[in-house]
Length: 478
Image 1 (cartoon, one colour):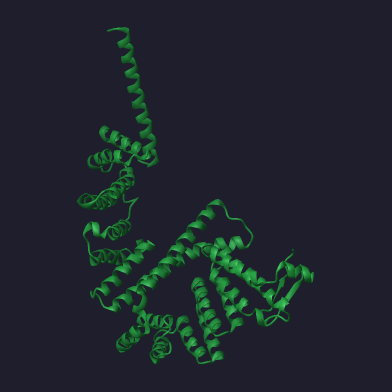
Image 2 (cartoon, helix red, strand yellow; image 1 turned 120 degrees about the vertical axis):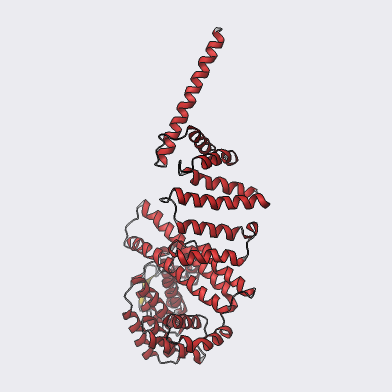
C-alpha cells in the first residue's frame, strides 16, 4: 500500500467516523426534542428517520418522502416525528398531484392520522382526527369523488359524537353549508336547515363564551392601567383571533341561510308545528328567537309563541321577549319592569352581559337613550371586552348632538364625546379597532375645528352637556 492510499483510507475512516458521530448527535437531539428514547431500535429506521428530518428541515419535502415512507412502514412506533413531519410531507405531494395519484395520497393522509392516533394517543385525539378528515374531505370533495351527503355525514358524526373537538370555524360553516345545498337539491326539508342553524349557532355561542371569558380578565387588567406580560399579550391576540373567526363564520352562516329563514317560510312552518311543540321549551325558544331576529313580530303567531314560551319555561330570556312586545305596544313602563326582572334573574356574568346588551338594543331602537346607555354600561360591567356596546353609546351621543347643547359650538362638542367613546371600543376589542377608529374619525370631523377653537379662545374649557347625556367634555388644546 502506498503512502497516498494509506492517507486516503485514514481520511475515509475519519469521514465515516465523523458522519456517524454527526448522525448520532442529530438523533440524540431529534429524539430528545420529541421526548422519546431510541435504545435498541432498528439502525435502518434510525437512518431513515434522520434523513427524513434533515430533508424536512431543509425544506426538501420531495426528497423526504422516501425515507418517511420507509421508517413509517418498518417502525411505525419509532418516533412521533413520523406523523408530525409526515403530514406536511404528504400535504406537499398532494398539492402537486392530480387524478388518481392525488386521491391515493389524500386517502393515505387520512390513514396517517389514524396511525398517529393508534401509536401516539397522547398527541392525537379521536375527535381531532375526525375533524381533520372531515375538513380534508370537504376541501377535496371532487378529488375524492364524494357527494355533499357523504361529506355532511362525516361532519354530522363528528358533531354528535365528539362535539368538544369540533372547534374549527371553517368546519362549522362547511357543516351547515352542505345541509343548505342539500335542501336546495331537494334532499332535506327546510326545517332540518333551521334546526341545524340553531345547533351550529349554539355551538358558536359556546366557543365565543369560552374565549370571551378568557379575554375579559386581560382587558380588565389593561383598563386598570397594568401592562400585560408578553405571554398575556400573545394570549390576548390568540383569543381575539378566535373571536374574529367565529364572528365571521356566524355572519357567513346567516348569509348562507339567507332567504330560507324569512317570514313567508317561518310563519307557516311554526303555525303547522305549534300544537305538537307548544310544551317543548327548546323548540319554543328557537321559534321565538328566529321570529324576533327575522322581524316577524307583527304576526299574531309571534305573541302566541312568546306567551307559550314564558308559560313553559319562564326565564330571563322569556321576560325579554315579553318586554319587547310591551315596548312595541308603547307600554314602556311595563316593559322596563320586565327588562329589570330579566336582568335580575340572570346570574351568569357573560349571559348577563349579552342580556343587558339585548335590552339596551330594544331601548335604543325605541329612542330611550338614557335607559339604553344604562344597560349598555351594565353589559360592559359584566363583559369589558364588549366593544360593540361602546360603539352603540357613541352612536347615541352623535345622534343627540343637535338636541343636547345650547349653542352651535356646544352642540358640535358632543361629537368629541362620541369619538372618545368609539375609541374605547377599539381599545377593548381588537377586532373592532379599525372600524372604531374610522367611526371616531368621522365624529371628530363633525366637532369644532381648530380655527373655531382658536377664535373662541376656549381650549381646555370644560363644556357641560345637558339632556339625557349629562356628561362633560374638555375642548382640546391646540
